[in-house]
Length: 246
Image (cartoon, rainbow, N blue to C red; front, top):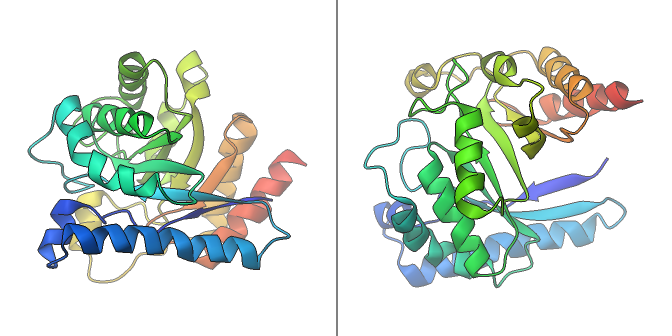
């Protein structure tokens, strides 16, 4: 099986950097170095098919968005980080844990400006809708309509399969969803924020659930772990997914 290596750049943006006294120059350096790290890992494991993904996260809280931007504002904001990432060896960019379509539209447009392939991963609540209340279907359709379907694919991340499996229905829009990167925990985002201990769920069960969705929707070929997961979860996801397609 191949692997997508994500860079540690999810919150390496201007606002998050300012909170820890990072200048624009140091953020540029850190973004570039993060891609260099995973590029070296790809060289180290040359016998494995590895794709390098430059992570871009939301401007605000990935669980509880405030001060929502317009698509134009989002494009202008994310241009700084995406321009830097476009000069690296990353194969593509993924906007992850995005909470509303306007920010996703801005990220897609920004990536297009700098000639970089882009994927978008939305986070959903326990009801399968984005934190702003819009459905996953409507969010994807809105981004595609505003960008001429420029994103290479969409994903869901930072949610347990119990939270999103019910909204994955066999309709044309679902063909745009290629990946599921799931939380180990069934807790809501509010519960996870307040938790004092890490809920690592059941690694075997998580693998089975994602493999079942892979079996039901064969076009969904990117599977992984988000909050609370470690290599136990990844191992079970990989093993169960292989069985699902064998």
